[in-house]
Image (cartoon, rainbow over all chains, first blue to last red; front, side, top):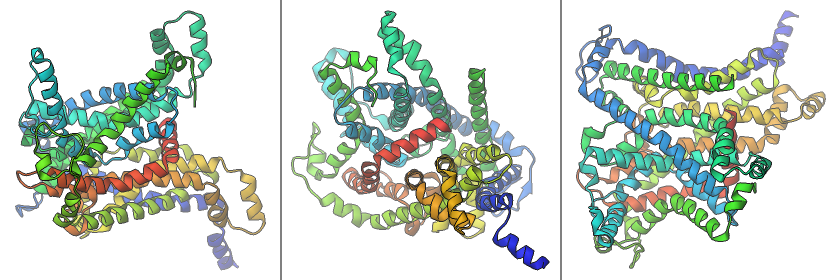
Length: 304
Length: 281
């Protein structure tokens, strides 16, 4: 009798049991691919694990972290990453807002507009890096071609074609331009959806009150877009901190334009220094968490 | 389509065309420029000033693209990894989403939030331990090395979308099926999932594009030629000092075709998926 009941429960379990059964695969996957790796990362960051040298694994306390503090390459990578973040996040927001406003104007071929916003989103970052590397080519790149043409038309400007990838700052500029192009279209799609939920009556009322178009933009459009902006901004900032694909795909002046993610990848996959790269990755983890925390505080603060 | 006052004010016909032209050129120009480059021969490529449209289009670069690197292998690898991880992700998140949306479960919001929180973890942070784990498990350079992490990376968006789609399906239909002798799971597969098909499909497209585009893990975990995906393989045309741009462009054109097909055919779904995920998340 009892055995029968057990079989019944397996075949037709209670709702709560079934719910947990259905959640099990997701939980197992997340534990295996996210939770366990993050824990082992934190543990590894306190050990000396250099697979390439065959030295035995040993506990070193905070040595890896201290080494990072004294590592000029680490600081340069952090600096480059922060530059990319502080330039491309606002950049993508401003360009994305501009594209969204333009795309929101009535136009017969909506499909073409939508396709134009979707293509940059759908292209792999690694492709975008390569495409823009070609754009910035010193001899045959289109940017230098435009600069040459403008220089011939208006010599007084003093514009000269640049060897973009010889200079760290110009390489950073190329990386930022490529990143803004790639990420602004997603921002535009989100903001466009936000724009389309703003009732036309609000603008009509403002019109009656004699508000200028700029006032309407600042008083109506921007505040109502903030909710859709915030979530997109959180994810954009988190991915900017992880910038890897685009800088990796560009030729560049070597290590000068290295990002934190590139430096971590170099130390783990190429140098097989898992202890040190784990400490660096923990730093990146904390940076991401801090960013999320700041944004969420702002979201909550905004709601109160 | 919304026709608010502001756009009415701005909408003299010429202005509308200008606005549209800016958006279209911004979005499509880079891809078209790569297409133009891929059709140029060596002589034309190094001509100055540069030509904007190829004068003597040639397909030679495409032949070279397939000859210099196993481009077809890269395409198949990307397809295999993206399709399998998408299917696995949809299956796992459909189960989880059903439990969250429909079943008697305490703290369902907390569970959903925890799954969504996975998308906040930096991929680089996961890459270092995953590299070590896959190495220890002898899974480096295998499809599983990418399918497993991609499946998890796509769980948040898939679960989020499916939960909201499952919510919209009337319980009565499900209850009727169960009165007719269908089990809960039977109702999930035969009634709920088919009714939520548009949502399942949209989530699937987003997951597919995410996996198709991923670079860091693919580069770090699968560096062997036989398992390289497209974003990794496409980097291999460059030598130490030389960038054979027309050939790279041809390879890029080939590699862009699947992405373009997906967004041309499914643009409505992609847009609705992206915006709902962004707004509700």
